[in-house]
Amino acid sequence: MNELLGYSDVWLIGGGGKTTFMFGLAAEWAAREESVLCTTTTRILVPTRQQCEDVRVDALEDLVRDLRLRPSVAVTVARRIEGGKCIGFGADEALSLRSEARHLVVEADGAAGRPVKAHAPHEPVIASEASCVVAVVGGWCVGAPLDAQHVHRPERFAALSGRPMGCAVTAQDVANVVLHDEGWIRAVPKAADFFVMVTGRDPGIRSALEAHPRSGRMGGVMLQG
Image 1 (tube, one colour):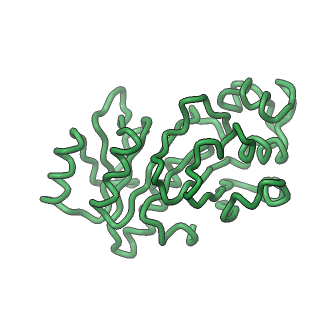
Image 2: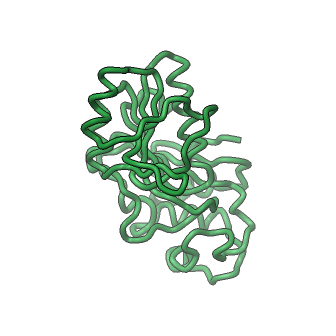
Image 3: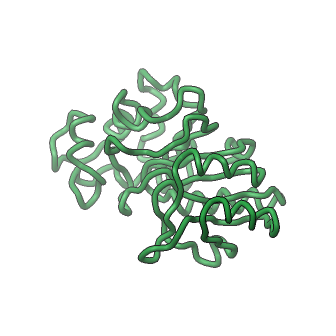
């Protein structure tokens, strides 16, 4: 995680605990008394008080006004709340919040609670001027069946990895989907630094990523047990 602490904005994609990682990263900045805003370009569960005590919901312009009137070290912002979830902003709107705190962290897609996924054409939602993108993968996906219970959009994952539905997901499958031209890196801005975070145990995902022919696109692979 230390590799990320110097960035003004960090955008999280993938599966395997993005929201938990977002608030953990925010807590690291807050502990340094560096202000941070958390938000999303999709939807996330309303944070618990342990994750973030200060949650503000309003139109973007009104939020900016409020943030300037009532600055805080760590704030989660959303456009509205529906069904217990914070509804976020467009990519450029989210990026504009970067000027309201020292750091901004954005959850840029969803995985329906699965540890790994393949993206639909409209995902992830990342600003073209993003500084840093982190792909989050739950290590427990390796060995699980390639099906809807364990993989978000399994048919797309199968097509990108070249593996049949129902087979056991391998670390190489994950690396192939993350670094495929039409995989996770497709929507990562060319100027953005790109990292992968493996959460939980690492059953060889880091090694598979580092050995991949396109590994040079990554700034590194991080582990969070």
